[in-house]
Image (cartoon, rainbow over all chains, first blue to last red; front, side, top):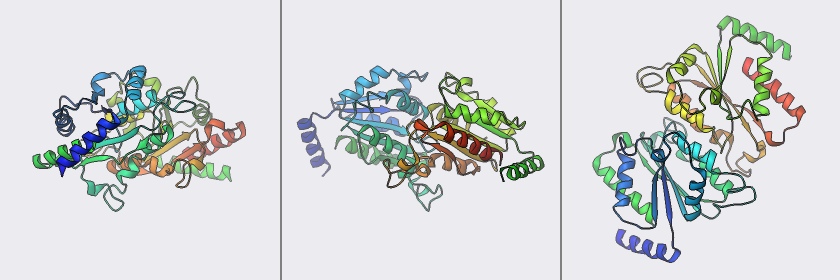
Amino acid sequence: MQSYRRQYADHMRKNKSMSTLILVFHPHLQNGSRVNARLIAELKAQGEEDITIRDEYAEYPNFAVNVDHEHELLEAADSVILQFPFYWYSSPALLKEWEDRVITAGWAYGGSYALRGKELKLVVTTGSGAAKYQKDGEYGRTMDELLSPFEVVAYKVGMEYAKPFLVQGTATITDDALDQAAADYVSAILD
Amino acid sequence: MQSYRRQYADHMRKNKSMSTLILVFHPHLQNGSRVNARLIAELKAQGEEDITIRDEYAEYPNFAVNVDHEHELLEAADSVILQFPFYWYSSPALLKEWEDRVITAGWAYGGSYALRGKELKLVVTTGSGAAKYQKDGEYGRTMDELLSPFEVVAYKVGMEYAKPFLVQGTATITDDALDQAAADYVSAILD
């Protein structure tokens, strides 16, 4: 099944010449991350040519986002993935700065729509388990609600907001569960 | 009526020795802001002694938040107000960095709860009018949903999450409506 899905995905990608841009916002992707680093490593092992993966905190340790370069990368992509660990029920700060700087009037909205029709997919890891993020769970709010600011951004710039890919309970995830999450992540990106 | 409410608020504040910390996160509070600058000016004109107002972007233009100093300010406050213009349906990036840096384990949660019992109130200005932020409005999401990450932060650290004070439609707000918003803001802070 996995094999068939993969073949089909390859077929679709070739026909559509899909290119995927993965922007990872994790302050410690190279030195500390267990889950996000593993997901990225698993994807890189696939050797897909039309996937670009960027460690944005490594690129911009002082938050000085290069807007023109980010625009070029986004314009070249068909699918944009924003990947991050949940920090205070939202993204780490650099992704917010990236939004504030990169999604400019006259380029992404307000006359010109450079991102229109592209897919936006979030990949989010949360330390707490999924059970806490329910209406009747400890936090009383769902992931859908907590991520809603990104959904409205997608609407505003004309992107297609895909179902987020979540890995939850990372604080206590077992090696086996992480293996499975990494395989699911690769499928979610490639399919 | 306003006068009576004000007297009562003064009475309550004296009895409870309430001190309020207002952290404003606006990249252009001094040079560009119309609405937030006006709200702050109106409040300062009241001359209340137990209100501290901080322009956080002026304090930390390079995002280098002084965690110890922020801890001291928060510890001295009974009520904490986070005030900001809505940027991409959330706070400007510096407030997120402030959250990521300042709300530390062992101080605000996880053993010690320095913020427990304090009030957390958001003051948010939005360029678009309130009608867009409805389930059946253009954005399809309510302010309550979009601000939900802050609500869960308050829960996590044991703060009392007050009803946010909103000024909406600031892109086209009239001088008269801004006068009224400023008066309402002062009441919302002092009462």
